Amino acid sequence: MGYYSKIYSAFEIIIDFFRSLPALAIFPLLMFFFGIGDISKVATTAFSCSLVVVINSIYGVKNSKKTRQIVAYLMEANPREVFLKVILMDALPQISIGMRTGLSLAVVVLIATEMFMGTNWGIGHRIFEAQLTYRVPEMYASIIIAGLLGYTLNKGFVAIERKIVHWSGK
Image (cartoon, rainbow, N blue to C red; front, side, top):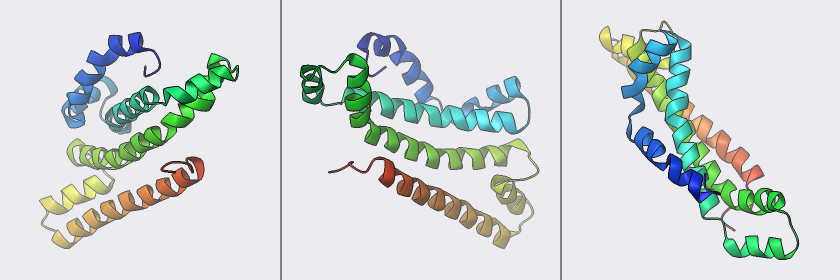
């Protein structure tokens, strides 16, 4: 979509519409389609994260340096090579930012859906049950575990990102 402006123009309104919807607001609709269970939690989480990744990918491709593309064409690269070796490499830092943001958002949405859904397990379920039964230490311990989970996933993603997108910021 970032490469072809006509495709971007055609889908821009759809992306902006769904980006404006809170993931938890669409959760009842996804529960209707997928039922009460893990599939609806995964669908809600995927919905909320996918738009972040898509939008960052679009802008990463759109903001690819035109001079690098022109130089690649002058060096007789075909359009596929220009896309894979120039545009995608220019967009990769922005794509990884979207993935990192999406990962953090996934933890938040997944825990929130576990709190509202009535599952029998999960960090969100533990937080909700502890709050209902006034087990305050367990509730705060579960909140801290959720924070540590998000922190650990973020640090792991940053380590992988440094190896894959090593030229970012240089």
